[in-house]
Length: 166
Image 1 (tube, helix red, strand yellow):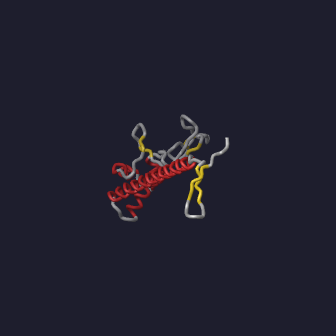
Image 2 (image 1 turned 60 degrees about the horizontal axis):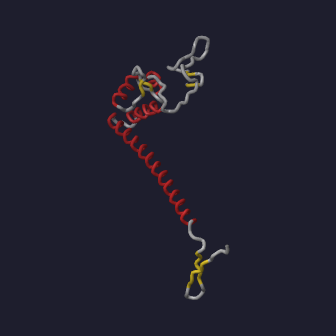
Image 3 (image 1 turned 180 degrees about the horizontal axis):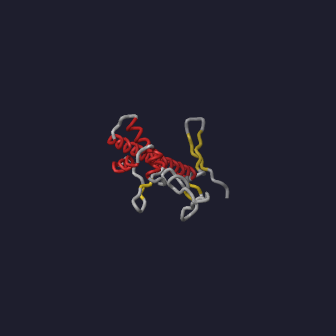
């Protein structure tokens, strides 16, 4: 678990003797997302229910790509743990081989990217439609107000020019 006092929990610092928490070096404010790489391989293996060697194999095959430290150690995020669990589910419950799972993951990533692109294009379309409406309103506002069409009940029509007195 990450707290404002620093990382505390399995694999991230158990604390000092006497119960005092261990503080991480650097800033004391952390912003964690599900993509933040915080778990070492032993913790990731425990959280995913897999053996560390299995995680290494999945990394070699490109099924899960954890971040690396400067010393080349693997650091897994919550999203990586979730992906490991999904790989395990597809393999064990669905009977899909690892090559098939890799293809499924690639296709899911492609769908996500395409959905993001569709959302971007929809936003751009909304912006263009709004700009067009503003330009149309500006054109209507620029119409001359001194020309007023006049219609008579009979078949002839006339144009009446109104000129304000100065």
